[in-house]
Length: 470
Image 1: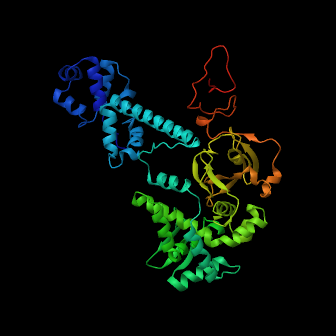
Image 2: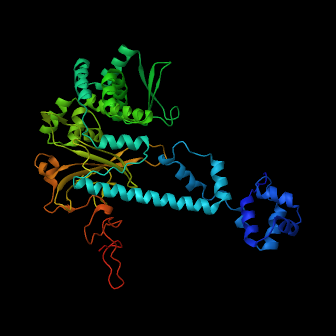
Image 3: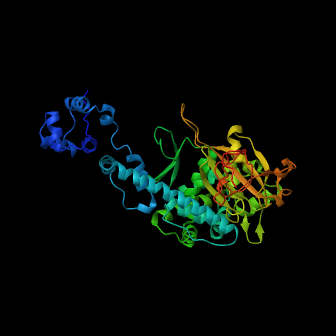
């Protein structure tokens, strides 16, 4: 096996400078020429085994210090330069390694400054939410990733697109699918556009859900997908063709700033259109009201999954024909919020969705079960919340299943209209919008102190939380 070359010039230079030696003095002690030492310090020559031993013997240096991983801070620097604030300034990996090696103190300074910047940005965002709850608007927006821009735009507005809804209902009537929606969609694709649908095994399409091949005019779907998800992918492709103008019009109304953001939003609107096509507005609203918004019952009635039926409930806000105003949030097992939506916009100011006491977090311990709770905010606002885990694509043997949790909620005033209201107890669970915005005293679940209050550190007494405040 070839010997690994060790380029540690900046570290050798730091050792020499720390000892107050000139290149000539150190070179003499190591029995090499000053010019050769200069090449080593500039990383133009590697350290040999003999030199490593001499450095260790003459200057009592730990060999691990010289053989350590190159660019120890390079990974953190890479994260910094991936921030949208520095878009267009992404250096190559070798450049980051050289920066971390040649100027480690400067690299550490950059990392500390970036962490402080992110902390201040988070605090500004929290304070903006507090002001929004008081009816005041604070513009603290900074550079954002295109995905963040799309999510912010969609979460802040009602999850209802009238043009797509009207066109989907009209198309569904012309399609007349009867009890075979999948067959009707496949027939339309073949007859109108010459596109055939084919399932492919995982080995043929290991990393894709679907792929449209323009040359062979075939839509390939992965066998990893459940029948429900396969149907949605077909409906998405049909929507992109049949509802192209309506999707484009709604996309323009979002006024997004970058081509990438528009591409992401177009996909989101196509997914919305697929739900509208599989669950036509009028029929779905009527069934939802008759079934008292039973998500499993609606999924069975329309041949869709729990997740698809729940998502569709957040869109029932047609003027003059609206349903209960549901909102939805999806998280993974690490607590990352993957998406949020609401019939009247996600209620960020009133509900928040960041409280660790929400039953969406407990859902992972009871996979597949529906958890129902009444929750109460510090200002007295109440919500009915329904949480359940949902499964992602089928995993290979030995591969961990992608499992997320879905919370769908509405104002507690609708408890008698919703079937899940029958399962509520008499005492609601007290929650907050998020730990950094919540001032509930003595909360066992608190994970962070509120930004509005100083920590109540007291040597003589300690509260239930390590983040007790004054």
